[in-house]
Image (cartoon, rainbow, N blue to C red; front, side):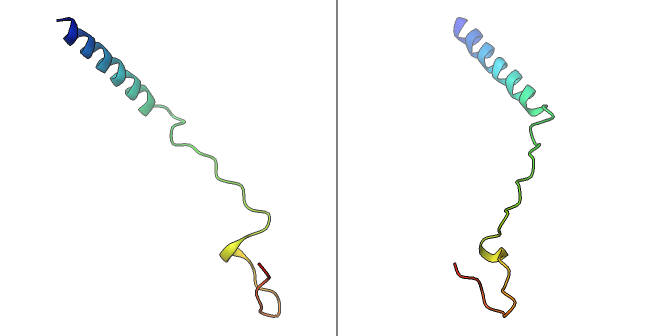
Length: 55
């Protein structure tokens, strides 16, 4: 009897914790990342003469 009670109690507490976490308003909110001051990779601009900048 004690074993069943302890299993039911712990699973019930885990269920309550999961329920509270799923219903938080700030769970899926994340601020966008800051833009790079100088682009790297494919975002680099070509030079006016058409050549690519040195890496």
